[in-house]
Length: 202
Image (cartoon, rainbow, N blue to C red; front, top):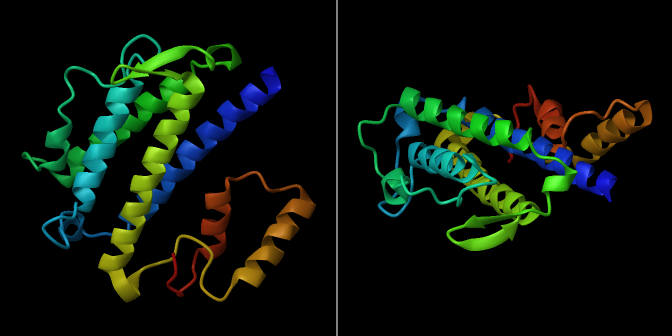
């Protein structure tokens, strides 16, 4: 069972890193002006999505095993407001949040995965809490990629397998597997394959 638990933990850490990198690859294509654009009154800007993810990261992963994931000093509603925020300050907040997550995950082991933690008073095993946050962040990273692609339109540089190149990607992937050199995450492999492509597809 320890092997399964360690595999789960390693895969979760790898997935968190991949989604962070995917979001940042999208944000790198965005200007400062586009970073704060709201496409309609009910939509969040990239800036607000970044702020919300960062706030959630800080709250959920600080003292993860010993305190509730919804910290008393978190004010979630203000994560959807710009209050003197700059792109630089928000990206610092983002980086700090992810550092909190990764430093916490590095302290976990197979033995801790069955421990109970709470989020808003609701009990979770550590596995459940990790899955809850992994799906939550991937949901918002998808929003970041979609919105960034919308804002860049024809100038977008694809982050995944380009349109009409799936067969070519499958050959590329099979070659990596046969060579035993498939060491990167799924998202990283497709991004590397797409690198330099002028086709626009997410």
